[in-house]
Amino acid sequence: MAVEKENVTPKGVLLVVSGPSGAGKGTICQMLREQLPDLGYSISVTTRQPRVGEVDGTSYFFKTVPQVQEMIAQGELLEYAEVYGNYYGTPRKYVMEQLESGRDVLLEIAIQGALQIKKRFPEGVFVFIVPPSLDELSARIYKRGTDSEEVIKRRMASAASELTYAAEYDYIIVNDIAEKAAKKVLTIMEAERYRVARTYFIVDEICKAKHKEA
Image: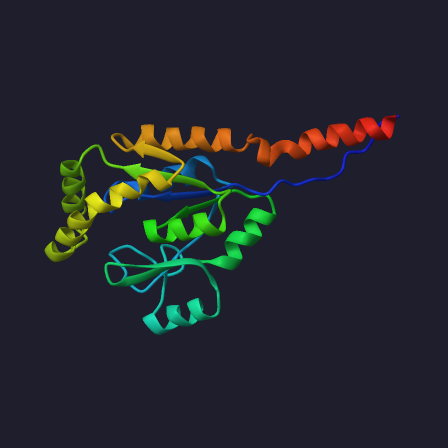
Protein backbone atom coordinates (compact mmCIF):
# COMPACT_ATOMS: atom_id res chain seq x y z
CA MET A 1 0.00 0.00 0.00
CA ALA A 2 1.48 3.35 -1.03
CA VAL A 3 1.99 5.91 1.69
CA GLU A 4 1.26 9.52 0.80
CA LYS A 5 4.03 11.94 1.56
CA GLU A 6 3.29 15.19 3.30
CA ASN A 7 3.48 18.21 1.06
CA VAL A 8 6.52 20.03 2.48
CA THR A 9 7.80 23.14 0.71
CA PRO A 10 11.29 24.14 1.86
CA LYS A 11 11.96 27.82 2.25
CA GLY A 12 13.76 29.55 -0.57
CA VAL A 13 17.42 30.53 -0.42
CA LEU A 14 18.17 34.18 0.29
CA LEU A 15 21.25 35.13 -1.76
CA VAL A 16 22.85 38.40 -0.67
CA VAL A 17 25.47 39.89 -2.99
CA SER A 18 27.65 42.83 -1.99
CA GLY A 19 30.98 44.41 -2.80
CA PRO A 20 32.66 47.77 -3.35
CA SER A 21 31.17 50.11 -5.92
CA GLY A 22 32.63 49.20 -9.30
CA ALA A 23 33.38 45.57 -8.37
CA GLY A 24 30.79 44.45 -10.93
CA LYS A 25 28.14 43.01 -8.63
CA GLY A 26 25.36 44.57 -10.72
CA THR A 27 26.56 42.86 -13.89
CA ILE A 28 26.89 39.53 -12.11
CA CYS A 29 23.42 39.80 -10.59
CA GLN A 30 21.95 40.58 -14.01
CA MET A 31 23.57 37.44 -15.40
CA LEU A 32 22.16 35.39 -12.52
CA ARG A 33 18.67 36.69 -13.23
CA GLU A 34 19.00 35.81 -16.92
CA GLN A 35 20.14 32.27 -16.13
CA LEU A 36 17.68 31.73 -13.28
CA PRO A 37 14.38 33.19 -14.55
CA ASP A 38 12.50 32.00 -11.44
CA LEU A 39 14.88 33.81 -9.12
CA GLY A 40 13.10 36.48 -7.11
CA TYR A 41 14.74 39.89 -7.19
CA SER A 42 13.94 42.52 -4.61
CA ILE A 43 13.95 46.08 -5.91
CA SER A 44 15.55 48.44 -3.42
CA VAL A 45 14.34 51.87 -2.39
CA THR A 46 16.80 54.75 -2.64
CA THR A 47 16.92 58.49 -2.16
CA ARG A 48 19.61 59.10 -4.78
CA GLN A 49 18.77 60.63 -8.13
CA PRO A 50 18.07 58.26 -11.04
CA ARG A 51 20.96 57.66 -13.44
CA VAL A 52 20.48 57.70 -17.20
CA GLY A 53 18.32 54.76 -18.25
CA GLU A 54 17.08 53.90 -14.75
CA VAL A 55 13.33 53.51 -14.31
CA ASP A 56 11.34 53.98 -11.11
CA GLY A 57 9.85 50.66 -10.01
CA THR A 58 12.23 48.66 -12.19
CA SER A 59 15.75 49.80 -11.31
CA TYR A 60 14.85 51.20 -7.88
CA PHE A 61 11.92 52.71 -6.06
CA PHE A 62 13.08 56.32 -5.98
CA LYS A 63 11.90 58.01 -2.77
CA THR A 64 12.51 61.20 -0.85
CA VAL A 65 14.43 61.17 2.43
CA PRO A 66 11.25 61.74 4.52
CA GLN A 67 9.52 58.85 2.71
CA VAL A 68 12.34 56.42 3.46
CA GLN A 69 12.59 57.61 7.07
CA GLU A 70 8.86 56.87 7.45
CA MET A 71 9.38 53.38 6.01
CA ILE A 72 12.16 52.81 8.55
CA ALA A 73 9.96 54.00 11.40
CA GLN A 74 7.15 51.66 10.30
CA GLY A 75 9.48 48.65 10.10
CA GLU A 76 8.84 48.24 6.37
CA LEU A 77 12.50 47.71 5.47
CA LEU A 78 14.39 44.47 6.02
CA GLU A 79 17.58 46.51 6.08
CA TYR A 80 18.70 50.01 5.23
CA ALA A 81 21.93 51.94 4.97
CA GLU A 82 23.16 55.42 4.23
CA VAL A 83 25.77 55.27 1.47
CA TYR A 84 27.55 58.34 0.14
CA GLY A 85 24.81 60.57 1.53
CA ASN A 86 21.85 58.57 0.21
CA TYR A 87 19.54 56.01 1.80
CA TYR A 88 19.15 52.51 0.36
CA GLY A 89 16.82 49.87 1.73
CA THR A 90 15.11 46.54 1.06
CA PRO A 91 11.30 46.21 1.37
CA ARG A 92 10.61 43.48 3.94
CA LYS A 93 7.23 42.14 2.76
CA TYR A 94 8.23 40.97 -0.72
CA VAL A 95 11.35 39.13 0.45
CA MET A 96 9.66 37.23 3.28
CA GLU A 97 6.65 36.22 1.17
CA GLN A 98 8.85 34.85 -1.60
CA LEU A 99 11.08 32.85 0.76
CA GLU A 100 8.08 31.36 2.58
CA SER A 101 6.64 30.22 -0.76
CA GLY A 102 9.86 28.35 -1.53
CA ARG A 103 11.23 30.81 -4.07
CA ASP A 104 14.91 31.84 -4.02
CA VAL A 105 15.50 35.58 -3.69
CA LEU A 106 18.49 37.67 -4.78
CA LEU A 107 19.47 40.85 -2.95
CA GLU A 108 22.12 43.13 -4.42
CA ILE A 109 22.78 45.50 -1.55
CA ALA A 110 25.37 47.66 0.18
CA ILE A 111 27.71 46.16 2.76
CA GLN A 112 26.04 47.91 5.71
CA GLY A 113 22.68 46.46 4.76
CA ALA A 114 24.06 42.97 4.14
CA LEU A 115 25.54 42.85 7.65
CA GLN A 116 22.19 43.90 9.11
CA ILE A 117 20.47 41.04 7.30
CA LYS A 118 23.12 38.55 8.42
CA LYS A 119 22.27 39.33 12.05
CA ARG A 120 18.54 38.91 11.46
CA PHE A 121 18.67 36.14 8.86
CA PRO A 122 21.91 34.14 9.37
CA GLU A 123 20.65 31.27 7.20
CA GLY A 124 21.05 33.50 4.15
CA VAL A 125 23.92 32.99 1.69
CA PHE A 126 26.29 35.96 1.66
CA VAL A 127 28.60 36.49 -1.33
CA PHE A 128 31.20 39.26 -1.55
CA ILE A 129 32.33 40.38 -5.02
CA VAL A 130 35.83 41.85 -5.24
CA PRO A 131 37.81 43.32 -8.16
CA PRO A 132 41.16 41.82 -9.22
CA SER A 133 42.91 44.95 -7.90
CA LEU A 134 42.19 48.50 -6.71
CA ASP A 135 43.66 49.84 -9.96
CA GLU A 136 41.12 47.79 -11.91
CA LEU A 137 38.37 49.03 -9.59
CA SER A 138 39.34 52.65 -10.28
CA ALA A 139 39.38 52.02 -14.04
CA ARG A 140 35.90 50.49 -13.93
CA ILE A 141 34.40 53.38 -11.98
CA TYR A 142 35.87 55.95 -14.36
CA LYS A 143 34.78 53.94 -17.39
CA ARG A 144 31.22 53.78 -16.08
CA GLY A 145 31.05 57.57 -16.35
CA THR A 146 28.02 57.97 -14.06
CA ASP A 147 29.68 59.69 -11.09
CA SER A 148 31.35 63.04 -10.56
CA GLU A 149 35.07 63.28 -9.85
CA GLU A 150 34.31 64.05 -6.21
CA VAL A 151 32.11 60.95 -5.82
CA ILE A 152 34.70 58.74 -7.54
CA LYS A 153 37.44 59.93 -5.18
CA ARG A 154 35.15 59.24 -2.22
CA ARG A 155 34.38 55.74 -3.48
CA MET A 156 38.05 54.90 -3.99
CA ALA A 157 38.96 56.26 -0.56
CA SER A 158 36.48 53.91 1.08
CA ALA A 159 37.16 50.88 -1.15
CA ALA A 160 40.10 49.58 0.88
CA SER A 161 38.14 49.69 4.12
CA GLU A 162 35.11 48.10 2.44
CA LEU A 163 37.23 45.14 1.35
CA THR A 164 37.99 44.31 5.00
CA TYR A 165 34.32 43.34 5.46
CA ALA A 166 34.81 40.37 3.13
CA ALA A 167 35.61 38.26 6.20
CA GLU A 168 31.98 38.66 7.34
CA TYR A 169 30.66 36.85 4.24
CA ASP A 170 30.32 33.17 3.39
CA TYR A 171 32.01 33.37 -0.02
CA ILE A 172 34.43 35.70 -1.82
CA ILE A 173 34.33 35.83 -5.63
CA VAL A 174 36.99 37.69 -7.62
CA ASN A 175 35.33 39.33 -10.60
CA ASP A 176 38.08 39.23 -13.21
CA ILE A 177 35.71 38.03 -15.95
CA ALA A 178 32.03 38.57 -15.23
CA GLU A 179 30.84 35.37 -16.93
CA LYS A 180 33.22 33.23 -14.86
CA ALA A 181 32.28 35.02 -11.64
CA ALA A 182 28.56 34.55 -12.31
CA LYS A 183 29.12 30.83 -12.96
CA LYS A 184 30.83 30.51 -9.59
CA VAL A 185 27.87 32.12 -7.84
CA LEU A 186 25.52 29.73 -9.65
CA THR A 187 27.60 26.82 -8.34
CA ILE A 188 27.30 28.20 -4.81
CA MET A 189 23.52 28.46 -5.15
CA GLU A 190 23.26 24.88 -6.39
CA ALA A 191 25.27 23.59 -3.43
CA GLU A 192 23.37 25.70 -0.90
CA ARG A 193 20.05 24.18 -1.97
CA TYR A 194 21.29 20.80 -0.69
CA ARG A 195 22.52 21.89 2.73
CA VAL A 196 21.24 19.59 5.48
CA ALA A 197 19.51 22.50 7.20
CA ARG A 198 17.41 23.05 4.05
CA THR A 199 16.81 19.45 3.04
CA TYR A 200 16.56 17.39 6.24
CA PHE A 201 12.78 17.35 5.77
CA ILE A 202 13.43 14.71 3.06
CA VAL A 203 14.94 12.33 5.61
CA ASP A 204 12.16 13.17 8.02
CA GLU A 205 9.56 12.23 5.39
CA ILE A 206 11.31 8.92 4.69
CA CYS A 207 11.33 8.07 8.39
CA LYS A 208 7.66 9.01 8.79
CA ALA A 209 6.70 6.88 5.78
CA LYS A 210 8.57 3.89 7.18
CA HIS A 211 6.83 4.33 10.53
CA LYS A 212 3.39 4.44 8.86
CA GLU A 213 4.15 1.29 6.87
CA ALA A 214 5.16 -0.49 10.05
